[in-house]
Length: 142
Image (cartoon, rainbow, N blue to C red; front, side, top):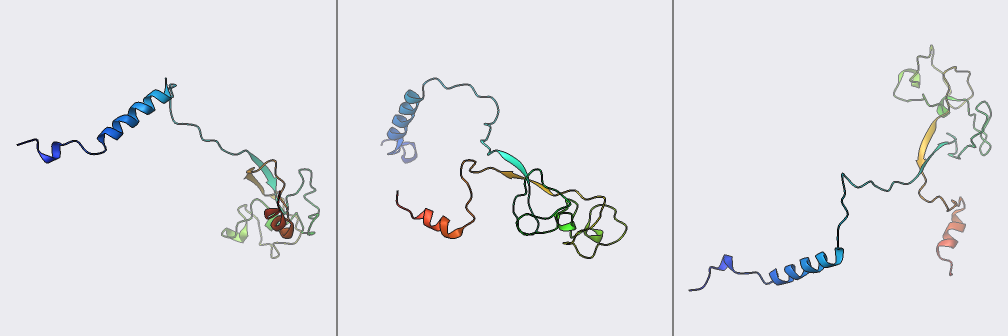
């Protein structure tokens, strides 16, 4: 009798061999790579956002002033980098007493504006705050 069933060639073996030969012919000499491939990460930038409305504040903003968009007090606990609702007196710094109103102006010596690092996913595109304009731009004919 012939060969056993499990020693027979599969019906896709010939296709696999052809694909391997084609890929070797197309690729040519492969460049040597050492280590993992570096991912392409988007650029980042540091910004200070208003704790009241979320608007990006200009780099030269006055920390003792108010937000130009919503008039939120910028020298307040909610705007501070050390504000933490789970810490004692809701501050990570050793303050002597609790400040009751977190969104009003105070004279804390530990104040530092909260700075966040954000990704620039679309550096050329400007964000539209008007939802109606964004909707019309989505379906406009070109």
